[in-house]
Length: 122
Figure (cartoon, one colour):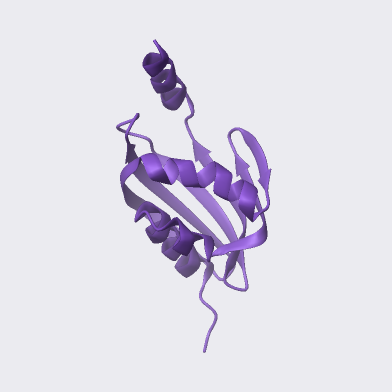
């Protein structure tokens, strides 16, 4: 039986969290994951859960625009629609070892979310 490629793991992880099954998504996350996000570095599975799970709860839908990868690295670009922000594109570069995501670099624009929070606070 062959090990899944990084792209296989990245797509399965993405399907799980965007399908509102965060427990299934976490099965693809290494205990010692390092996530590099616009807000800074997030280390460890529980810290990662604290960062990503709240976003998954406001997600309405997501569409993968592009997905590329090899045995150890995958790159996903996707569009999301959330409760506060109608159009929130993002990209992730994932490193996978032994079927688990060990590093995830996520790029997205925080400004629309900051503006939505400010508008809701008024």
